[in-house]
Length: 408
Image (cartoon, rainbow, N blue to C red; front, side, top):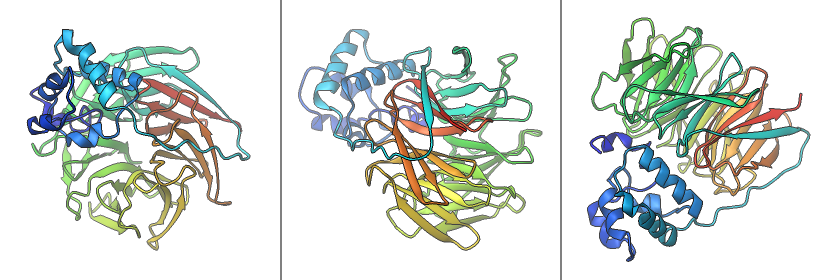
């Protein structure tokens, strides 16, 4: 596990990170010593185990960790799994609230082929395919929703932790190697992968990425506190540092003028980057406890964000700095996460509820409508939009991709 330090948002964000000193605080029982010896310090131990998982959730986590090369002796896997199930059960989560409304949807889920893939980000491409990052299998997956057929594409650098996704004008699929300090490009026709390494050794975790209208690729590096710019024509990468230390740039979107917006998950701020001057501007949110995680922009260039920490949907007008907020239907612990704008209606998922929900918000009426996800969701970290205006989800812990078809 020489790459442990690179896996902070791929492996450890998933499960646990046990410093040796923490082993004294583990509950007694068969399997304790293996847990203490096999886990590493990417995240505080208690932060990951504190929430726990269901029995099936822990089994899924163990498969994911095996896919990512974590060394647990084969004859100890069952013992460790039972230890975790017994001592770290899932804590009670709020029930997903269903609100009736005018929209009609149908929800279809496909299980991805490789167990423990942990689909992180979805991407609806121009040809109608649904792609996803197989974060724990070091692969990109493609689903044809018409036939249900999958194809998985292996990546070059082992355990690179594919995370964010976008498509260029030529149909190439670009991804962030969140654990590999790289941006990658996959040619779906040949399976060839081109990698662009980070020029700064301190930038180990490219996170979310997006193309602007001119074909420039922008990305965030959360733990490194950077926003990046990659020119695909030259391969040149420029790294920008936001004014706020440890602001943790996360989700991204581009407005109609080509201005790049991002949310700072480590601060109560939204940031923007001028694509010409590369100047970063920060917009403070009114509540110091706000931690915006994902972002969408409507046709009027209004910025919408999911306030993960407080259970709110937020609206920012960059022209005035005015912020308006609405409590998400399932409340303060609903953890709004992946979000998209579809025909100027806001769609997002509450990731902290059981089951996860799909939420629709109409800015004109300021009314919510919501549905629970039949397969549980668990956890919808990001979303995408098909060319015909449907909502796409990646469901990491249930190892699935979901299409929400919206009646027109």
